[in-house]
Figure 1 (cartoon, rainbow, N blue to C red):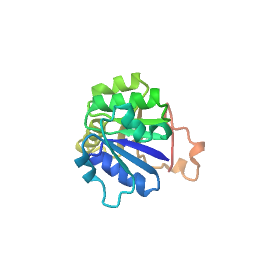
Figure 2: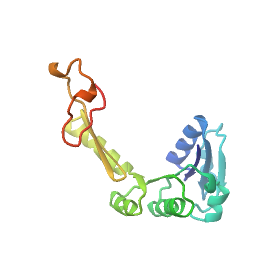
Figure 3: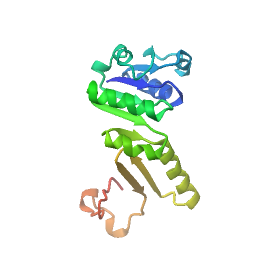
Figure 4: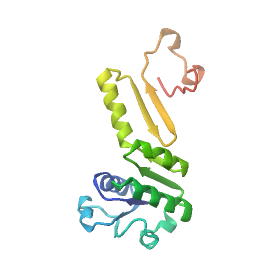
Length: 176
């Protein structure tokens, strides 16, 4: 897969390193040359310095043949703009934006963009730890909220396959 990562901070550099090690073609775009130092010394992808919302910079990064783009700068506005450009102008099939402000998430969804909000993920994790409800976790990705709950298997469920169990309203049993 050809992947463009916008932003080379902690998340962008780590994502770039992981994707490159998995054999994907990775291009990292950042407007600060010094941020490329965050990449692993053995990073074998391409670095492009420039303003990420500039279409010429995106073309230099190979957006016209990109399979995916992840906008992970620390600026929600930059992430939404570059995501829109990637999705609407260059028709990149998979576009994901990180946003910090949960209130901005609605705006991203109105534009049909998939998001990851570390603020919401952190709040949900800490809530579970504080309340002691470590058996349940809730995650929001884009317009979808997923709740995971670990429940003990009752004797009447023993020996049955997941497809034979009615999990209830809007629930899916994914294993036991």
